Amino acid sequence: MIEETTNKVILEERQGEALEMDTPVESNGKKLYLESYGCQMNFSDSEIVASILTKQGYTTTRNEAEADLILLNTCSIRENAEQRVRNRLTEFKHRKEKNPGLVVGILGCMAERLKNQLLEQEKLVDLVAGPDAYRDLPNLIGEVEGGQKAVNVLLSREETYADISPVRLDKNGITAFISIMRGCDNMCSFCVVPFTRGRERSRDPKSIVKEAQDLFDLGYREVTLLGQNVDSYRWNISKKGEIENPEEPTVNFAQLLELVALVNPLLRIRFSTSHPKDMTDDVLMTMAKYHNICEYIHLPVQSGSTSVLERMNRGYSREWYIDRIDAIRKYMPNCAISTDVISGFCGETDADHQDTLSLMDYVQYEYAYMFKYSERPKTLAERKYEDDVPEAIKSTRLTEIIDKQQAHSLFRNQAAVGRTYEVLVEGTSKRSEEHLYGRNSQNAVIIFPKGKLQKGDYVHVKVYECTAATLLGEVVENR
Image (tube, helix red, strand yellow):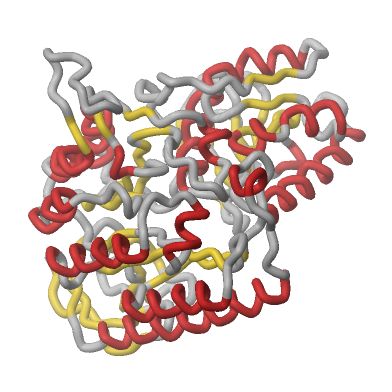
């Protein structure tokens, strides 16, 4: 049971692990249970939601059974994510039959896309709030308590939540997310994000730098700058490249990276996600210039076939992507690269699949997120292409992709054996209280003996053994 005098902000992760942070507030006597699914942006948004509702006096809880308000922050990227949310909402509907005063709502991408179906047809929720409507949550909750269904899924061209200080829901107090932009203009044919999160807009760089400084002052030692396409971040620059306010400086992503890196050399900087069509050499040069900008890039390829990439409307070819990989290797030979791969997209032939496998061999990614294509409603692919690759072939191709990636991950980790890395201590290993874990600049997890080290320390670790997922090491020099 959580004490009434202290508001412990909890975010239930997909794995079911709760994260918390003490924030004293005056309770209104009601308890909030918040569950988040999907990408890092969703988890960052949940911190904004927690901040808004904490200021309204809600005490959050790990125990969904004692909640007065249940909110699910949802994802529409893949069908299985939506199905998991539906299953949870059905569970809560049964609980609501025993507790009519319980308020259940959904937030985020799935909320915007399926608002009418979830509210009126299936009657699974009481309120729906889209990604740009979180400020309106207190009013929406009030409408529900007054006996009405409540919905706000209006998309905004201005909302960035820049003035809201997120309630930090991370467990270790060392790493944190900073949202630098919202929305997406890319219109990839398989993706619903532009329709659920709206048009792209960037956040004031001064507020980003201030948030990074505040986090460092609180003891955080790593921030991840988040955006659907961070490389297209631009402040005071129109889409046509024109300066919007002559009295204000212009800032692109490379310049923003530098501004955040200069907050403190002990604050590590990561970012996600990059887009191959927009990644420029000036970003790579800035990364190479500053030791505290991590040498790790997540660069989704989706497919190694130019013809498939054209149908995906990705805006680049196989050759362009390889050029970006070569540029990364040129400026940062030790940079780790991860990716996203989709198997079985519309019209994908075996030759297209082989192109994906050969590109994976060329890059030899450290890590990859790999999925079968699932058609999403309202996307360009649904309207324009037939989902014509049989499910069995999708599965076979995905298995080949996964097997290849596992081999590459093992190869990359084996190459790390014998090398020494600077590691940021993030916490105690799940397998042993006598060991700590942290990540190096390349985002690889390293396990090492605890000794007298504390979370937030920088330590030098020499790797002596590895698996496909983890490095094992010994401390050789403290910093």
